[in-house]
Amino acid sequence: MDEQIPVGRVLRASTSAFTVGCRQLIAEQDLMTPKLGALLKATGRNGRVVYGLTCNVTIEDDAFVRQLVAAGVESAEIIEDQRQKRQVPIVVEVIIVGHGDENAVFHRLPPQPPRTLDEIHTCNNAEWVRFTERHDWIRLLLPAIDAPVDQIIVAALRMASEARPSRLEREQYLISAGRELARLLALDLTRLDGILRQLR
Amino acid sequence: MGEKIMQRQDDVQKRGAEARQLLGAQPQVTEELLRKIERAREIDEWRRGAKPLGERLDEHRCVAAQTSPVTLIAADGSQIFPDRHAITTYYLVNTGTIVLRKGSGLAPATDSAPEIHFEDDDVYDDEGQLVSNEDISLMRSRREIEALARLAEQEREALGGDLSTPIVALVDGPLLPWLRPDPQRSDKINEEIDFVIAQLARLRKAHAIPIGYVDRPGSAFTLRILELLNLPIEKITREALRRGRFIGLTDRVLFKDLAPNERTGLFTPYTNANDRYQARSDGDRVAFAYLNVAHVDRGERSVIARIEMPGWVASRPDWLDAAQAAIYANCEPTAYPYVLARAHELAVVTQGDKAELDSLLMQVMLRNGMVPEISVKASNKLLTGRTSGR
Image 1 (spheres, rainbow over the protein chains, first blue to last red):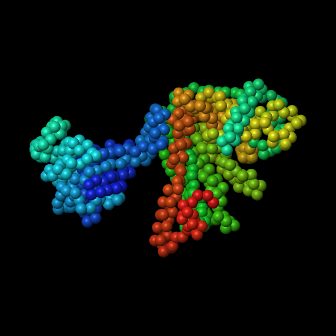
Image 2 (tube, rainbow over the protein chains, first blue to last red):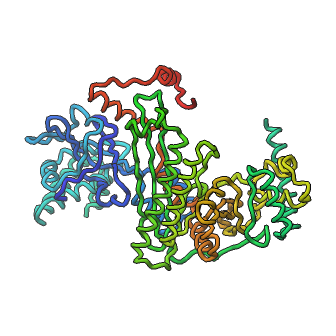
Image 3 (spheres, rainbow over the protein chains, first blue to last red):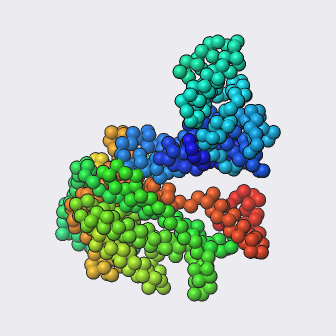
């Protein structure tokens, strides 16, 4: 995660979420498509950055692909052609969890959404560490609806932990995040238990 | 209208059954039949008949399923015709190509080659007239067959000259371009035929098998032969020929009982383009067969295509069998050659693409201090939302 990988550009956005259209081929999916819970950033005017976590990735289809599936295509060359050579759109949905600039990161919704066609990149390890120094982004994420929030939290915490250089720092980070979760979900122990079990 | 459609369908079925019965009763290609075919050709040179190349009219041939490696190449073209009502006069030809190496497990090589023509010398002819749509279509046909020849040469070279892997080169539609038989354009027509001959020679040298694939053919070459069976030679007149019993039917009704992966015998069509091709290629003639590309395991009814090939392919049963097997296997997902479907997709220029190109041209013109304007007629069409048609 040392690189900032270009993901695509903003298709539509609000102050709480945005959708990214990826101009990439399925063959490059492993390399280019962000994982569930990945930290993405939209860099706007004056260096203002909006941060979000991947909450859903959709691979669109088209009539040609549907016909091939219905026909039960077996040819390896045709399958590879569809995967590598045809431009089948991939759409990434992102929940906003903060914004900032080069001086500071704020774990609250941005005053304005990203703009249409803003370029979206994944964040590298240093940015992960910087963004997750405090845990307030979890509070912003927990009440979100229409998204598998608990799964996103687990995935994001794992990636945030992996971004830290030493084993000790990783463990300390996860313990600290676990304590924050326990505080935030003190009245919903079943949900807390579910998240912590997945983190182990 | 519904009633008329029903009546027509009944009529097609009745006469189709009659044609199939006739074919079953008199399948032999006799000397007398060949004389009648020649006679009909002499009397009406524009009659789109054909001459059978085998001994029977009802020959069928099924080949073994294709399992060994084969390379399929396809090319298809698309164009934007010049529009004098547009912001500027230009035309575009786009050629889509695909090379699928069956048995490699690799993704095919694909390409899309657009050419935009806007210089006065390209857009206007010697008399200052806007280049015709017919000429642009011919340019598109040239690009297609030229691409097939180039790719076939490259593929054969990549195979190190190994001839054990057949290369089947497919073009969408007839092998020879459609050429309006205009006596005033005879030189131009010959030029086009010569170009095709040159490309076919390159394909032949590369040991490639060129095939023109005609989906849902509307031809009735074989029915024209059947109409002669019970017509005495002395009664063959222009009027009798034009009142043929099976006018309005297509050969598809005749061969709808072909089994999957089965082709008919070979015929050579009597067309002006084929005659010119023969005259300018030392006697070679394009031949064709009908092929059922339906896959029975998918419950499809017969899907009859016409496959056209040069005479030098028709005379090589092993090449023809290899091409048939490769085409049939490639039709599995879509009852149409996958490579042609993809070449079309790579070539096609949609209305959306044209609008984007026009928008780019508009920006370029504005940047250079010009004010782009469409004609009043085009502007009104935009207002009423009717942009198609004349």
